[in-house]
Image (cartoon, rainbow, N blue to C red; front, side, top):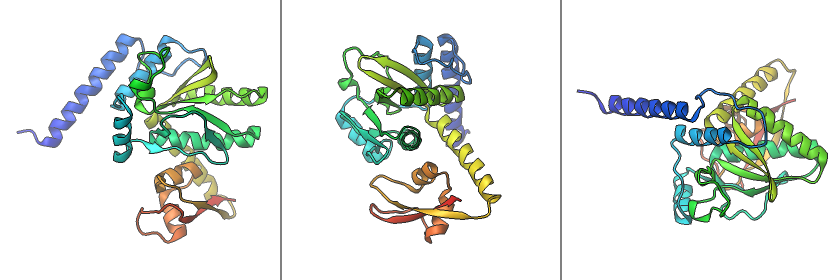
Amino acid sequence: MATITQRLETSRLRRVSAIAAAALLLGVTLGEASAQSLRGSSSSLNRQVLQAEIHDFTYIRDGNQVQRFVDAGYLVPVRGNRNFYLKGVSFPYARPEARLFIERLSSQYMRACGERLVVTSLTRPLNRQPRNASSRSVHPTGMAMDLRRSRNVQCRRWLEEVLLSLEKQGVLEATREYRPPHYHLALFPQPYARYVSLIASNDRAEQSSSPGTSAVTYQVRRGDSLWDIARAHGVTVDDIREANGLRGSRILPGQTLQLPLRR
C-alpha cells in the first residue's frame, strides 16, 4: 500500500506534468528565458500565469481573503523606508520574496538615482481589479507590483536596464505601461530566491578572502523575519544569530540587530 508521502508525491508530479503540458499549449517551456523587452506581450502574460500555476498561488477574491493570507503568513506587510514609499496602495501586502525584491531594488535605486522608488500597487484582489485589467492578471496572487515611472531620464534608464537584466535571469517579467506611466512587474518567487541566494553565496566567498568585516545596525520591523533580513543584506541567518547571540529565530519589532557585512 502506498504511503501518504508517496501519494502526495505522485499527486505533485501529476500536477507538474499538467503544468508542463499547459505550458506547451501556451507556447512556452518551464525553462524558457523571456525575450528582453518592456513592451509587454501575450507570451509575457503566459509566463506570468504559468509561474503562478507552478507556485500553486491562489487568486485572492476580496479583502477578507487578503487578511486571511496575511494571518497565515502567505502575504507579508510592505512598509516604506528611506529608499521607497507606497502611493495609493489599497492592500500593502505581498509575497515575502516580492517584499525582499522591493527592498533590495529600492536600495540600489536610491544609490544610483538619489530618489526614492514609488510603489503604486501590490496585492490586488479580484473584486478590486480596474476595468481595464487583464482577466489573467497575477496581481490577485500577491506576486505582482507596479512602480511609478520617474520623470528623471537617468533614473528611468537605470531602472529599465536593471529590469531587462532580471528578465534575462528569468526571475521576473516587466512591462512599461503608459496610462498612467508605470512599470508592471510580476516577480517569480522561487527563481528570485535562488538568484538572491547565489548572490549571497558569492558575497560570502568574497568576504572570506577579505581582510576583515564590519557591521551595521538594523532595527526590526513588524513582519520581519531573520530570513528576510539576511537575504536583504547578503548575509546568512546563522551570521545574524552568531553576531547577536541568538539561539532561535524569534525576533521582536523594535529589536536592534548587528548585521555583519564585508568591509
